[in-house]
Length: 174
Image (cartoon, rainbow, N blue to C red; front, top):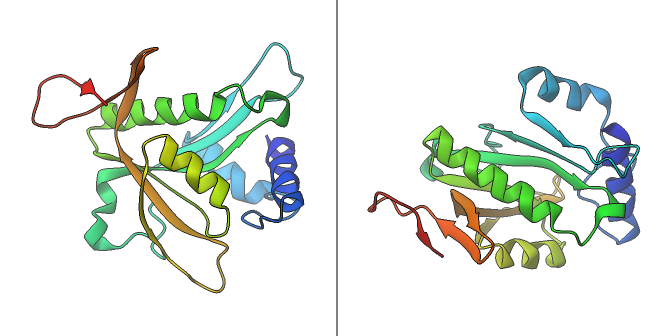
């Protein structure tokens, strides 16, 4: 897991994006997520290491999410990384759909994440996946700060996403 995160960080830096530490995250940052049961790994029989990782929890970074955002009404994605050998296979999208399903099961409303203020390509990716740009928080000591959210969603069929509509008893097509 640490190697995958380090590889992702190195790739980001090779693209001129400094969202994550250049050498990846130290074990001391990841071990608590594992102990809490909020760090997930996707394995593949075709790879010797993980295909992807993601943390999903209720931690709303207070530098980004304010009390008026009702942070308790969301789950937050952290440390989403896909093995470069699996790039373009839709794994990131599938993990975000899975996370949206977890939002629904938790009774919360929003799936939220933040990313680099300068990573316009990743921001466009999130917009394509039906996230809405909430705002950009520009703190000089943080590379991240572009905030996104979408309603809890779950993929019910290959035709597309279904979005939870709280006024109906069942999900409706997006």
